[in-house]
Amino acid sequence: MATNRPVIEVLFFIGAKTSFIAGHFQRRFLTLGLQGGLIGGGCAMALFALAEIAARRFPGTAGGDQFAALFGTFSVGIVGYVAVLVQTVLIAAVAAATSRFTVNRTLETIH
Image (cartoon, rainbow, N blue to C red):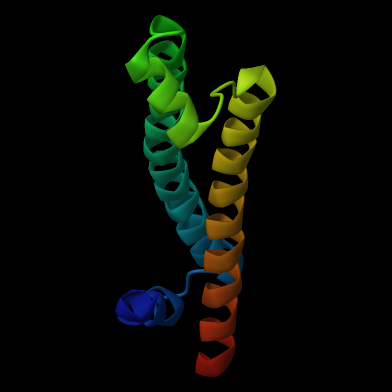
């Protein structure tokens, strides 16, 4: 947000309302948080699914036994995938709230 301070100041000085400025930044960082969370969460879910498939594919073989010894049983289940999705939304919400708070604090220092 430090790099956006001049933008915030210009918007304020040309007459934009505080709620407009804060809302704009909040939406922008909500979008960025969702994108980042979906990329990270999607990669995590893909890795969990791939590991679960690999663990099921080789049961009772030497490679399967070594995989089980190294990683244990890989069963994330639907609850694990839902938890990843909830974390994605939580990350986006925290990013949005933080940006709104930061913009409001920046505007307070300008007044």
